[in-house]
Length: 302
Image (cartoon, rainbow, N blue to C red; front, side, top):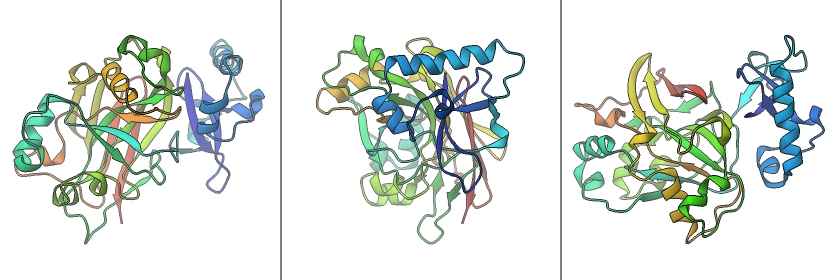
């Protein structure tokens, strides 16, 4: 099942919708009798019976030749599925081995060394950027703008002290994140919060796809393209620390609230991994793609 946040027009209010199986159309959950006005609200309060209403609507649409009550995605304005997360996003650093190699090559003192434990950091998200939204260039502040396509997990219910074998029960689904990074700020400040947390540095979407649409554990390709050129082409089966480990470990010391987003790290092929580095510039188009979820396309702007 696909879950969207969207507007009927540019100036309209944000709405929550459920998508058809093909991923081409959306229907407001309000039309199905659910009164939740945001994705956070839906995740926090929807009952199992209400989730079943959504699943049934998708199933019924798939058996009808014409589903006029679904609106084509091309006729709405997509927003990030969780435009304003309740808490900072949790991210994994250096969670693909080949990315660890290219990162250390770029700046060994910042990214090198052995890491027997997962590297966690938080990413500030004032408002996530939607598919077709703009990534700000921050000229004068950022001289090394980079992209990072990532498979992200969305927690479905509060998780505390969860065993690895039980993690699946706590997941809602998955989405795509572009963990945009200012490498000069990231390395200058000896920590990653500022360099990854600037406004507009979190493209997300195009939707949340519920966990039942994927095998467990999820092994899916993670790709990025810059101006049509394939840059990253990894797979979540290459994660050093997988989803079950990460969610379980974090939950031992903190409550992962429903709606928490965890970005699991990026594969090799980012701009700083090139020799010489190949960073983004104004006008560049970045596509992040995960089969089964879709793709988000963003252009570097002012």
